[in-house]
Picture 1 (cartoon, rainbow, N blue to C red):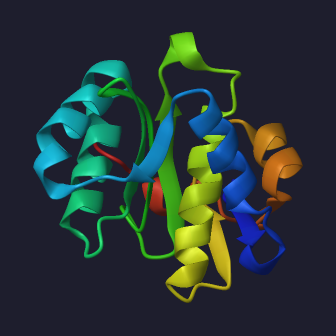
Picture 2 (picture 1 turned 45 degrees about the horizontal axis):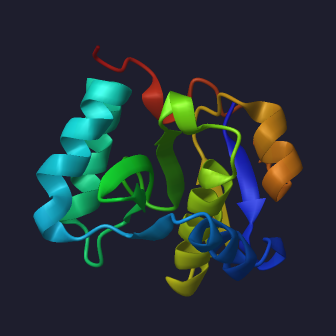
Length: 155
């Protein structure tokens, strides 16, 4: 099921970004010349489908893909407005770097950008870790939203 997040009740992004900076990580909006590096990393680390969505996020203005970078290496990514307007995702963190707050910082950065773009709510489509999103951003279920926009997806 898809989930809904009220953007006026989200946590402050600055604390999450500061925590990452103290660890030597930068969370920021990706830049156009990084497109191939980021999209290729997403494809190799996750899936061709997610890479396709990430590619679309690079076509938006401003770019709707945020990345986590450490020592010029991509550790994670998060997109919004990729498959549909007002949708958060896809998002992922290098499996060897999980549990350190990178995903949370990327999520908060995207939700903050969505709020700045004028959205009152964000939709998280086809949620995998339901409890994570419920706990982290109070995401609630959207009734009758499954299978949603991904119905009949070619793979």
